[in-house]
Length: 422
Image (tube, rainbow, N blue to C red; front, side):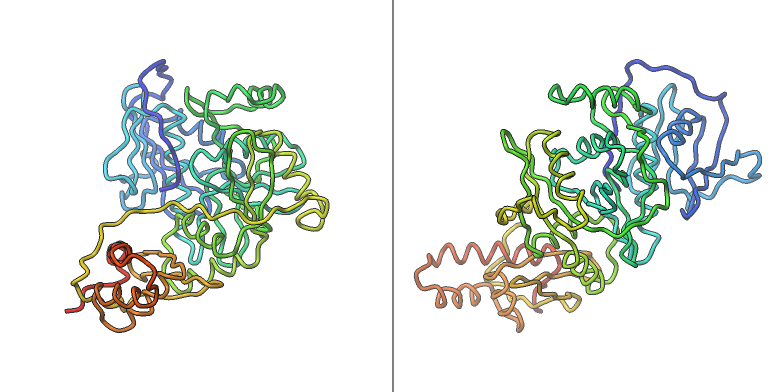
């Protein structure tokens, strides 16, 4: 499911819903399936306000003549007093007691996920994207990197066009597809934002609750707007840091692109090749910054020229990769393992990337892990791998090597990249 931190709150309720029993089915052009709203005209109004160029065909249940097929529903909202419940195919249980803006957010998240899933070869990148002087720049990063706030701030730049702040479909032909959705801003605004940006937010604030609001500015790309991606930037926000662009190696860019894709990747080899081609064709950078206005000014200087990046903008050397680590239980060193038959392997520079074709598992190997993967070409125990590495690295602690091998094999097994040899 696309990123949507849904607020559930029972304070300040205002019941302005349609009379009880009104059921509306929404069909959006280009989206398979429907959105069903039960006594939720407020949510329909919010959806209409935050979407640009994506207008649904609205049908009432009486006109339908039959109960809508649940299997065809992308999302469903049902009134719950003065609040709403969200029923989603990507949630095990409904989210209950949502305010109007949060209910609309849930529908938008479901629609974004469904749109990306239905098109073959579509990457659904969890990112923000803005077009500067005709160059589409993708901005992503870890949680709390300031992506949504930065994208919202860029809606105040009249000569820029905002494609998204959450999900950017990149179709099989390599062109990005704007869904026409307004960016969602965390509230309240930080005290450090400029008075001009605060005035912009007050002027263009759309559907909102006490935690989030949709910023319906005038420069949102209408639904269906397409453009090639020019640059991929990973954000790194800190304290007391002047805005600075750093180079980023293709290996790290591939890792971020894979991790930011919300679509089911399908066949691993083709999907990985698609992501790798994308990374190798883009200007890949990392931007460290603290001040919002400083970051906007740097983006304007770097991408406002015809040549990317602008010659007068200095690009610093690459920073160490910071990819979120996942801890897996260690494997038994006495167990004999073999590679899974459904693992696809691709090399980028000196690193290997592994995919499990049916589990959508992904793993990046550094030089040592790559050596261990090579040893797994034939069935082998963890202890045998540790002994081999101890011979190759005689100065290393054998006990530490054994622990490292157990940890890596445990990760491989958890990700279905290897399996016990019967």
